[in-house]
Image 1: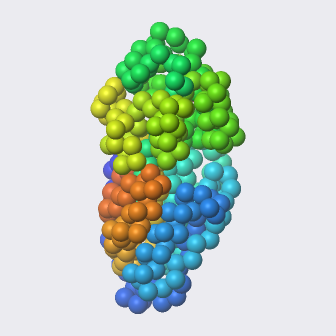
Image 2: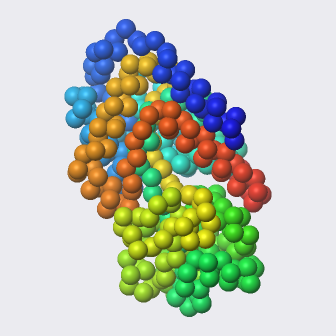
Image 3: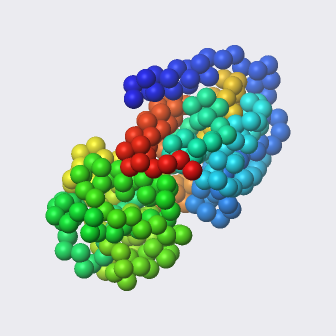
Length: 324
């Protein structure tokens, strides 16, 4: 993994060292397009529109969201990657488009490592491990012991094969030495319905939807998958602190530009994003959605992306998943 980290860090440094375009001082002189690779109304779209407002407020130009959904975000990603590196097209990348897709899609039309200039990490969100109340395990360590005593007898739901929920659950199974049976659903609603009905036993779900169900007693929450506890459910421990030290699996969202964007423009965009992530209204929106505001430098994002690509490539290979 070190070679990947070095490669991404080098890419970030090269991007930062590139001479700025002659008109970087006047940037932006016209509206900016932000390509969101998912449909309008979803959480990624909400994040995109929220950060677009903050970038616009700082740079004094409209930031227009353009939804280009399809193929797990790959259609929008390819469009952004092929755009001019002038700072007037940005891309809202995710843990799918810039993390798992290189391993789960056979003929990807873009390369996250070389086709984008990282700007800044925006947000991350963990999943919550929830089980049906009939399962005897009351804590995560007890759950792991139960799985080891009952290999391939516990079913877990996901929102689709090859997605983040599926891969995170398999990562958990790999790191705990356990085996469960995968039951893919078309969306979280039918999966949660079957979990509450006892037709399946386990699900790794988004915190905003899982936490209320746990508090109502319809499911039991065991842990969250992020590096730290969720602000929406601070009483629920992390996987790392209770059972698997170092475990960290969160969805994330970041801003990119096409590779080769001038250094001066990249710096302005990075500063605008980091300033926007301190806005109280934005933070309130993020908190309600179970998101943690992140921020940082382009090099931080490059290193994060490198680790994610390496991690998910290992998981995908280990479970024998064939890229589609």
